[in-house]
Length: 122
Image 1 (tube, rainbow, N blue to C red):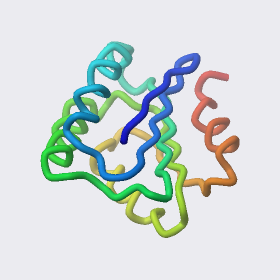
Image 2 (cartoon, one colour; image 1 turned 90 degrees about the vertical axis):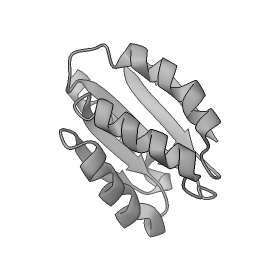
Image 3 (cartoon, rainbow, N blue to C red; image 1 turned 45 degrees about the vertical axis):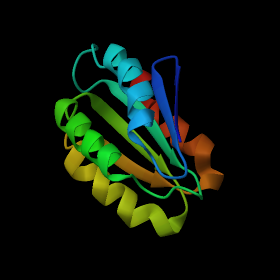
Image 4 (cartoon, rainbow, N blue to C red; image 1 turned 180 degrees about the horizontal axis):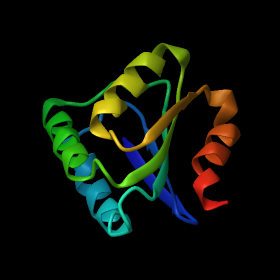
């Protein structure tokens, strides 16, 4: 399950369970419109729910291709999730989004994550 909302320029992605190709079929058209901005300007929060279980094989391939196409679109990425996902979430994000600054937050710090991701807008 992958949900995407856009609020005043901030992209908020919530990922739970195992991501599938159908999730990317819904996500990519939304993001393509956002990615038309100037490179390096899209702030994002990625929230990994406790039941997040990675990707099926087709979704993983879509994630890699998507990351390669949009590697320079992001400015700040706040990753929100359980501490057990910290190393995994940021290590996976680093090669996919090399131009972005990435910060990890625990679920109780969601508001801090949003504030940090919006700091370029201030």
